[in-house]
Structure formats: structure tokens, C-alpha cells
Amino acid sequence: MEKKTVSISLGTVIRECSKEPNLSLDHSTYFSLKNRENVHEVFKYKKFNDDFASQLDCFNDGTNLIGMIRPSYSEFINKVTRLLNLRLKGKVADDEELTKKLLERVEQLKTVTSEYELEQEFPLLCEDLRAGRRYYHDLQRLKKNEGITPEKFADGEHYYYGCAMKKGLHNFVITQAELYTRFITRRKEFQEKLQQTSYNGYIAKNFDLDKFYMVVINEYLVKAEGSKNKEEIEYYINLVDKYLESNRKKDFSIRTDAGLKVDLESIKKRLKNLKRIVSDNNSQVEWILIPEGRDFTRTQREKKEESTTIMNYEEVEKLRQKGERKRAFYESTPYLVKAIGLRKYNGYIAYIYENGEVVLDREYQENAPSTAMGDAIYHLSVSDFETLSKFDKQILMKHPRVGRMNHTNTWEERVSRIIEREATEEEKVESKKLVKRLQDKNESI
Image (tube, rainbow, N blue to C red; front, side):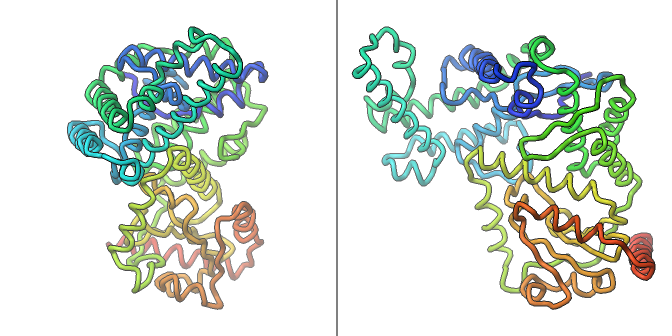
């Protein structure tokens, strides 16, 4: 039975895999129009500025390396949720509870009586309204200044925001409420429609399949690196192993949207580290690694995390790319053990290296996008780890035996210099002693 395995950035596919780079716009148009047809057929509406076509979903039954490539239903759900400004923690479950919460947001939308209120309660819908006004004004200007006949713009004039401009904010709100009600209540019908769409033929004809395979294999690695489920990690390890054993051409490199270089060497390196993770080299420590501090209360922390959930979709996507790049970076490094504190993966993670260095950074969490880059990196020696990692940020920022850095453009290079420093024999011994102490404590729990 096939299942969804990963989502793929359409931008990466077009940029890295196109046989004819000068046809990039044509390829983007193809995928947008194809998905626009699906949107219009199910919902009877053309939303010209958003075709839900920036990602592709890959489905696989485990026997093939790639499987079936289709439009992304998950992208549709995520965008609808954000457009309605619905605050959810963790992964979105596509169930009756989600239906209820989304329809409650639609009912709240119906009560909006001013543009200020719309901006406060539904900021992304307000952005849509203003984008629609600009579109409508440009359309009218072109008709007037360039003498283009109204018939030429017949389709454009049916653009929703044109109607909203002429009928006022009340009509905008009512029509948007009707639209999103259809999106919510008929979404399973839309999902079934997407499942009837295959991009495999178009991709095989217009894209370099060897490069396309590498794009997907990278996403398999990203998915495995972000998983806490051993069975799921092993599933993706098996697919990557099959890829390495296959006859597909691999003597090239690609770059992800986040700028991460992917080639055969990096794939092998990351796969090796995943196999190391499966062999259970994580250790639990009995304290919170770098707590926020006494003045950082639970309420403040929750407020900070919630504030990151309402962002422009593109901003969240950029943070996701950076977060996945951060995760891939650490998992590609030769750490001896990964120490996890009482806040589990919601807090700091400690990576312990043979040369006596310990690097602490926040694990990226999809439900808290700011964890991609929002917290500083700390580094200290293995001899200080068990003492200093219990101190809060306010103390560590001033401590002479602790290094601190932000996630600037060069943070990976600076961390690499720290962990790649040649180790002395004494440092190797101290690192191994710390690892043994942590593992012995885990066995006694």
C-alpha cells in the first residue's frame, strides 16, 4: 500500500533538475495551471494569486525509490489553517476536530466589521484583500492607458477581489467566509481529486531524473533526521540504501532552497549518522539543558512560542528550510553522543565530540518555527558539561568558560572549526569518560 513519504519543494525541482533552464517559467506555469484546474473543479473558484502549487508530494509503497509524484494536499491544509489564523500546536491532524476549529474561525470572520479588525484577527486575509485591490487597480489602469478591450480582461474581472472592491468590505468578508467554508467541508473531495493527478510523466519528459532522484533522496534524509520514531527512520534508511545500490548517476551535486549542498559524499555521511542514531547513541540527562532562567516563566515561554505560529506562509517556509538545514548539519557531524535534557527535544540538545568540545543548540521544531535560528549556540568543554549546562542563559552569557554565538550566515563554519579542532589524547580520554558516565546513568534508570 502506498503512503505519502515526503514533500518536495517545486522550486528546488525546477531550479536543479530542469533539462532546459530557460523553460523554468513554463514549468512553473504548468504546475500552477494543473493545480488551479483541480481547485476550480472542486471548489468552483479560481484564486489566481495562490494555486497551492509550491510543493509536490511523493507517495511510495516501499518497493520503489521514488513512487508517485502528485500535488501537495498537505500544503493546501497548512495554508488554509494559516490563512484563517488558526493557532495549533504540533502537527495538524486532518480530522473532525480540525473541521470544527476551522469552521469556528470562519464564524469569527463573519463578525468582522472593519478593515482594522480584519488585520488584527486575520492578517493574511487582509494581505490578500490589499493584494487584490492592487491587482484590480492595475487591471483598470491597463484597460484605460493601453486601450485593451474589456473582453480581453473578462477572466481577470471575475477575479474575486475585483468584486470585493466594488461591493465593499462586508461583501469581501461574506464571500471569503463562503469560500473557506467550501475549502473546509469539501477538502476530502479535493484530496481525492489530487490523488487522481500524476506528475510522473511530465517530470520524466522535462527533468533530469538522476538529479530528481537526488532531490527526493535528500528529503528522505531530512525526514529521517527529524524523526524520533526508530521504525520510521529505518524505513528511510532502507530507501537511501537502495538508492546507493542503484545504477542511477550520482556524480553531481544539487542545492536545496536553504542552500544546503547535496552530493554522494554528503548522502553517505548523513546515512552513516542515521544508522548511528538507530543504534541508540542518545543519552538522557536528569536536568534541563540551559533553562531560560528564573524570570522566564511558563506563561512567557508559551506566549513566545505561540507568537511564532502566526506568520506569513513564505516566512514559515524559509524558517523550515533553515531548521532542516540546521538539523542536517548537526546530524552530519561526528559527535560521540547526543545528550537530551528533561525538556526533551523542546529544549537544548548537547552534542559531545571526541576533542572535548560540547556544542548546545536548540532542536528545530516544526510547531515552533523560531527554533530554526532563534536561540543562541553555546559551547563548553566536556569537563564543565555536567556543571555548566545546568545554568540558565543569564549566567552562561557572562561565564568565562562558555562560548556563545548567534545563527548568523557563518555559524556552521564557526561550529565546524570548534568540533574539527584536533584532539589531544587527554581530551579524547575525558570525552570517552563523559560518554560512559551518561550511558551508565541511562542503563540504571
